[in-house]
Length: 204
Image (cartoon, rainbow, N blue to C red):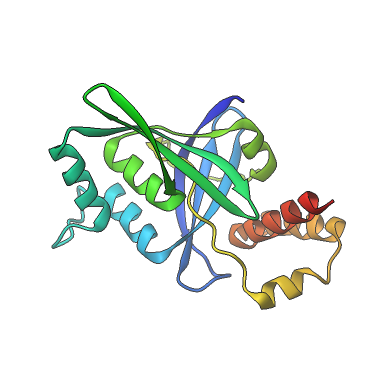
């Protein structure tokens, strides 16, 4: 399967789920965006790395500690791949190298992205994943900073009440709601609707 590269375009507060944020990942060739919901800690770690020249935490965060430890033992992350999407959750792995030997390690997507930023490692996903889960989001006046950081982070599962709400609607109705959310620039809800539609498609 073909790999496509992803770039982090924006981090936004997720109004649909408390204490969570949405990464907007961009695939240049198709111009599709991949919204990924992540936790507050991971969002803080990613944001601090993006702003490392402006903000320096008083003590190293977990991902900074991992980077320091890896550097001490000549371990380098060469790339991150988001290789699977299952029930709304992205799965990722990291290709690591030490003294010329490579090893692939599974990681939560949010951790993989945070570490990829610190190692300046490219982030990829498979073409079928971006085609299945990507949505078109017109981002106006966005800065042309292609910061290395691919899509992926672990998406939190919806609450029971949210699932109950979705169960009231058919797939065509959900798709219409998805289009409406995109038109209204409610990208967080769009990501949740996209995942629900994906789950329904896998059921039949």
